[in-house]
Image (cartoon, rainbow, N blue to C red; front, side, top):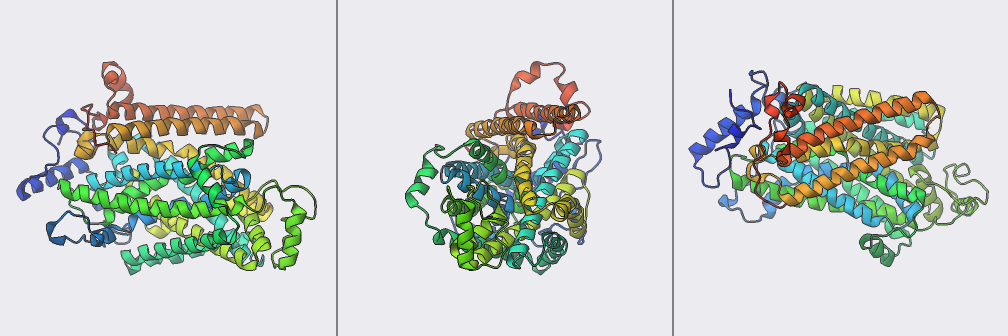
Length: 583
């Protein structure tokens, strides 16, 4: 059996070389494949490719990879090559535009006006860094993040990680169901009730799933179309509203919070959970496998990493602009306004949606905002066209995010559990769980309870983020796995600081929400147990990450192998320092 991928033996003489000949490259490729497929018990695990051997269960690109043009062997920048690599980054960027993000955007604008734009910008840039690491892992190793976790973590932590990722995917799916149901309600002037909109989402997703039967590029083009719809619809609202360019620039580049109160502060820390989606890191590392890249040749890998980073940068900057549109629209027009003021405008516009229960005839200052109330406000302020355009944007957001969430779930299940499921089964599994609480609230409560779930679900995303962030940092910092493409010092520091910050934010959320829970000893015991378990697991993953990053102090702890590496020699992590490759 080959030495473990993490072992010191495996690290020696096992690296990329820019000047290897074809025969040597072939031998390295063969060795790599045996490394990647050897099981912990000495048997052969199915290789990443064999995980998708059945046409019924193939991930969307398994039999339809895009060939990268050679351009005469030149590695100079080429728009032709960039176009060939374009696709995965835009699919990934859809998670930055889901209904949960739109809800977070409008609340940021409503509560703090332009003051939180700098946090939105920073969160997007941090997301870009993490997406780059995720894509790099997929390109260099030929495996996506869940597959690497399957091979490198012991069984129990691996199963727990899978559960955390599934929770994040289901939570995201609930947001998409909520957004889609509200969009149908607004587009039909309330004739399609919320519960009916929720039920419609069961069928529409299955219809969209058949799109990939028409080819990978057509599927990617469809996602590009949905992003374009969001850019046009939310851009229309932006240019219709009387936004202030000076205030936008100040909010983007001056880290302050002029209009912040307690609610705005909560919204500020919630932006990170809304923007950086944990399952998106697993998704992106898999999507980059859709291109034919010879990862035995250093220059080919370097080239792929460059083009994927350029594409991801363009895609995330576009998503940032769309999010910016939404924040700015709601930063103006509602500040200090009363219900009766907006109600009168609704009457003047003669919109068909029942607005009296949204903005009643009283003198109370408007205290909150959500995607449903936001749509009604736009209709009252700028006319029915603005309401319908807003609803179309929300519908595009919900549908596109549902599709990418389905792929993320399929990659996670195949990678973590080595289980092959047809996509329709995967959709049925996720949507069945997501739809039950959503449908119950739609039937027995109302639109405000439904949209209010988005805030809690954004908190859930933030709580799950360490379970993607820490594994990404762990594996991309390991030189025996990533070779010359392992993380440099700067990337390690930024990711570790981000991980600590996210964990601190999560603890802040928990402490903030505890007083809102039922005051009962059983509830306190439950919360205490869940948070203690959460912290123990995060610390466990963090210690392995630190060891992988290069903290040799653990070598001097006799119990370390017994506590963390018992019966799992593949997890023995080399401490040979990687070259400082910057990011």
